[in-house]
Amino acid sequence: MKSAYEIAMNRLDATSPSVKLTDAKKAELAEIENLYAARMAERRVFLEGEIRKAADEPEAEEALRRQLASEIARLEEERETKKEKARGSA
Image (cartoon, rainbow, N blue to C red; front, side):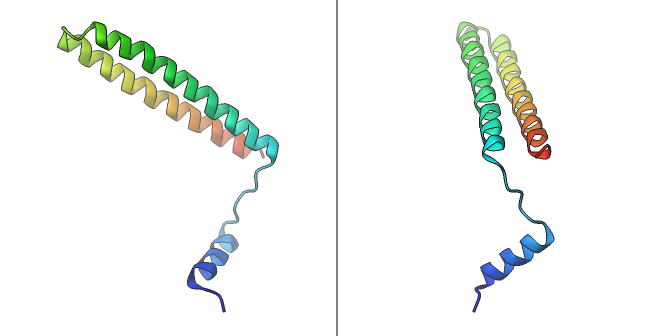
């Protein structure tokens, strides 16, 4: 007798089967993840240094914080787009 979870998972697989990734695709996705993690860390380090320098200027500090948030969001979006593209070409 199957549990409700097993029945639900069987139905889910029937309606939209999960994509099986090859080792090469997994490596490609990991490479994309690492590249963007490094880019985000680089921007954080740089802009947080600039924020510390601008600590006595609240307007400049706030502008730099907005810039940091914007750049991180842009990089995350770019990363997800590249990962989806890599998954789609499976």
